[in-house]
Amino acid sequence: MDEPTTAMTGADAQAEGLMALYERVGYVRVSPALLQPAEPFLDLSGEDIRRRMYLTSDPEGQELCLRPDL
Image 1 (cartoon, rainbow, N blue to C red):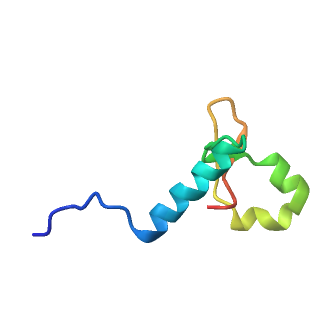
Image 2: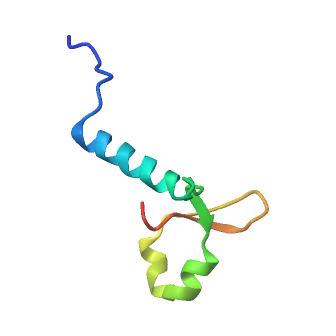
């Protein structure tokens, strides 16, 4: 069985280089939550998008969706 490798791929190295460049000029990496309130997306795109979204609810009953970029 093959051993897992820890070496960066070319794409990983390029991504890290870009992130370092962005950080040097003041940008900060953010990681938005996977689940977002559904209302803004429905307001923007209309109810037609509802059938194509992955929807759930939080314990308080707020409708949440999987981020559309995923």
